[in-house]
Amino acid sequence: MKNYLLMVCGLALTIGVCVAVIHYEADQTRDAMRDMAHDELTKGVRDGIERTVDKATGGMSDLGKVIGKVESTLESAAGTPAGSLPKSLPEAADSAGEVA
Image (cartoon, rainbow, N blue to C red):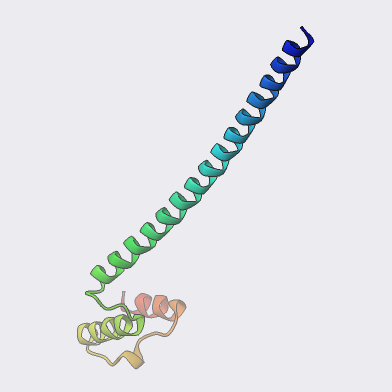
């Protein structure tokens, strides 16, 4: 009888250890998959933003080129060189108030 009790206790201990190991490994796998999904989501959002910006700027990825294109458009629309345009928002608001 004592031998059967020891075998049952050993079996229960073995099953308990197996369940604990499986639970631990499942947690590790879940955390790793969550991290991979977060990284992929972040990368996908970043790539999507870059594609959208490239499409919106006509493929110009350099901000200086975009600013140059905007300045040339403003020059042609206003008929004045870009150097004479207001340098700050308060100056732009003042000049807009004068025009109005």
